[in-house]
Image 1 (cartoon, rainbow, N blue to C red):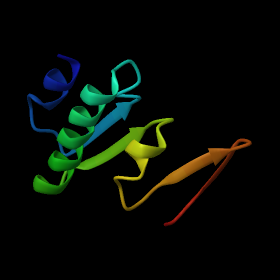
Image 2 (tube, rainbow, N blue to C red):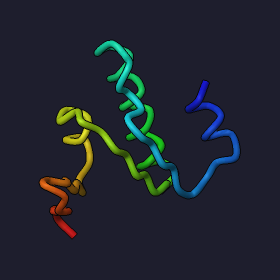
Image 3 (cartoon, helix red, strand yellow):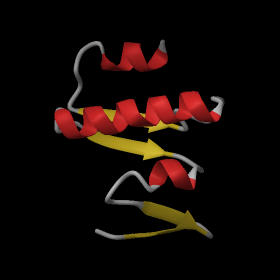
Image 4 (cartoon, rainbow, N blue to C red):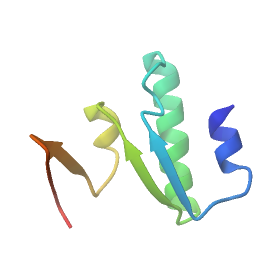
Length: 74
């Protein structure tokens, strides 16, 4: 429901904080597939925060915070 509510107005930017954190693997994969699809098909900017390496690996640009420092490809 939260994802549907966030997408109802077709935003240009979507902020997601652990969108799959409390889901089982099957549903987490479905949500990740949806977010990747929206990001690509609508050219929607997507800022996604996750601890899941498998979710993060779906995106070309990734940043990490380690010991309070931001690192990643520009």
